[in-house]
Image (cartoon, rainbow, N blue to C red; front, side):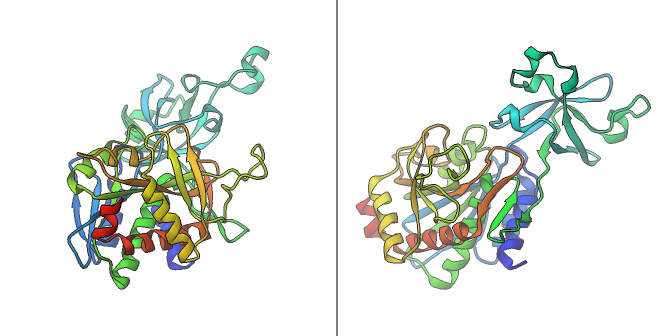
Length: 354
């Protein structure tokens, strides 16, 4: 396992649903402290300030720390947990999956269950199972008091269980929380490269909180950073699995995505052109992508104060918003290279031209 695999494993294995990102923030701060000044906004977003040859322009590169998950809503009299989603879930991908409940006594493993399929009526079988009809089994039995033994209570975080693994195709990595620990890893590695290469600005790598529940940390951290130009680094949707057209460009291994439309933000056209120009000049593979529904942290960054020219750089990922995602190592490496090279040309004159 090389240094990059180790970083990605450690980042994705950490638990941190929306509102519970503190362990991720501590990890990022610990890694970045030798390279950047560390501060926080009052919601918990971590801000890594890397000073270059000039105090300005102020370049914000954001990746959100939170992952989707659940919280304990109720403990039934039998000891099963009823739960509610944190972030966007599709019911099909929840049932039968392993989860970890973060109780005051420590992590508790469980599995999402429901009424047995053999007991469903034909009408019930044809319907999408609703979250309200599911529960989490953490080992409930007549002689085992879940509340007393495990310390679980309403409000506890429930995290998908999906440890990092390298697939048999060694370029493909699977893990939970690619959305958006991959963005955090990219700004961390970008700052690491800029420390050696230099840059004509000040770069702020920001691990934002609560993106999955309303882009909240991007709002507060952008207010602190006051960027002159902003980037959200996030996953994009891979279109290379069955069900998509064969001519779709959004495939694993085709380089980072330059996102031309985001449901929360229309990117600055000049910044799009600059990213394409840099990619072509440095021979970095890339493709265009769009996100018609949903949004990214750029949706709040670009509206900070008088407005901020902004762009989303994506990494094509399969099976987002589920327990396990899959992405390509080469896309990560090329996204770091692209973001580093863009940061190196964002001097005062270039930013003013946006």
